[in-house]
Amino acid sequence: MCEPWWKEAVVYQIYPRSFMDSNGDGIGDLRGITSRLDYLKKLGIDVIWLSPVYRSPNDDNGYDISDYQEIMEEFGTMEDFDELLFQAHERGIRIVMDLVVNHTSDEHRWFVESRKGKDGPYGDYYIWRDGKEDGREPNNWGACFGGSAWEYDRERGQYYLHLFSKKQPDLNWDNPRVRREVFDMMDWWCKKGIDGFRMDVISMISKTEDMPDGEVKGLYGDFAPYCVHGPRVHQYLKEMNREVLSKYDLMTVGETAGVTTEQACRYAGTDEGELNMVFQFEHVDVHGKYGKWNDKSMPLTKLKEILSRWQTELAGKAWNSLFWDNHDQPRAVSRFGDDTAPYRVRSAKMLATCLHMMQGTPYIYQGEELGMTNYPFAGPEDFHDIESIHAYQEWCESGRVSHQEFWPCITRVSRDNARTPMQWDDSPQAGFTSGTPWMPVNPNYREINARAALEDPDSVFYHYQKLIALRKQYPVIVSGEYKLLLPDSEEVFAYERILNGEKLLVVCSFSREETKVSLPEEYAGGTCLISNYGADDWSLDGKLRPYEAFVSYCSGRSARLPR
Ligand code: GLC
Ligand code: CA
Image (cartoon, rainbow, N blue to C red; front, side, top):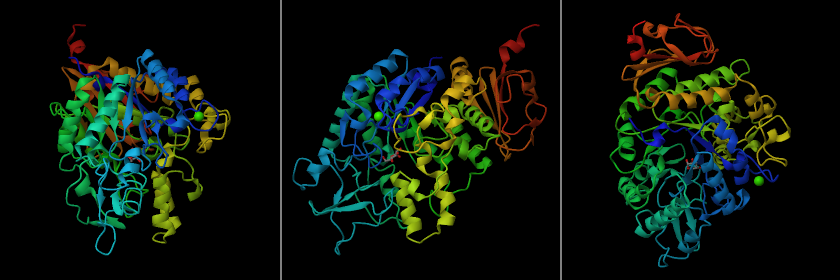
């Protein structure tokens, strides 16, 4: 059976600002990435997802684009990009670009023109509305980064919609000229030879005509029912596919927060002609009193239910991404594992095993392969991310909740956790820069860094390397049927994968304590493909050590061979 390449691929996400600085200005850049391609090759990944590198005033670190066909000055030049693409391809690594087209920067030429008035050629490129009779915002919607989703523009005398910051005005996808511009721009990148697109908040591009007040959640009304999975989103994606995607050999992944499995089967259904896969967040969403700012973990039974439902309900119909973290999420080992010294390495390997043996395309976020951890924030002045800064103002400085209560919540999930510089070695600034990094390096870099990992055969790095290699070797990992075992256990995540008589048993303990477990005996004679206590150090004896993980493989065929 021959699956499309993106079903067998492992993706590595790079957040360029924090990956590698080549010129000492403290900001990661394209040449820095090129200089580390051999490291990625060694890890064995197939694809790089490059977070945005386009021209941007950096209100949201590049997710606010002012020119889609230029490179951000701090990151280098278009020649540097071409060189990166060439060098990556030389090593058999593909590059998937971040496509941020729900909104642009307010400094984009289109917006600068659009705010001049309704009648110009760009008058209808964004979502403009008059205020209410008393001059207030057109409705009560709140933006993702705090405040109202509407901003009054004096020049034009109207409000514009921004679901994110006020420097990220939403494009009007109902205007065919906007779609044409976006498709032409995508085509331009495809002609350059890039290998795909990760589509930022793509489920939000179509809005309802009517924009009534939303249900108040927190301080503002919720825009989701009117802007997420909107009325024409599938029509526009089919058009994009017809006009651009279908003409090239690409990998396309849609960031689709709040999507159900049924909706995912439309966005990423095998025969739908839209995208290859979704990137959804159900397993990382834990909402509480203060919205996403929450210091609680999801119970393991619930986490298993969610991940398993995505496994079985997409099987044979659509394709999913597998991830624990990215540039918007806290560090995986700090959130789902245990980042304290005795357990960090063990639990990071356990999490990797648990995820990489599932069906879908795995994503590794930079530093995850080293078991990098959350950052020890001392106070709100340590935040760099617009979302965390605004959230702290809105919840704490406003007096709605005490610092003491809010602090553990915001530090646990702040996006800044993921954005501290990559830890390359134990030299000052972790080898990320020879200057002053734009964001402080996590002080644990002396112990947790790439050089140390490469020198230690038992490191998290080599565990990932092995998992990636296994995916290439065993079709059952890519294509096997998934079966959850022990759904009620709060300690153990165990499942089987089955394909034509080949079977895998994946066992992962999420517990710091030794736990008792009963597993199918047929696997006792299987081959151990990987374990986090040492190659042959595993058994089905009914006991699991803290954060133990192993995979046992049985092949029906060899079992039937005469002895
Ligand atoms: C996506 C990106 C996030 C960004 C937002 C607005 O969720 O992953 O980093 O802030 O969209 O573009
Ligand atoms: Ca630099």
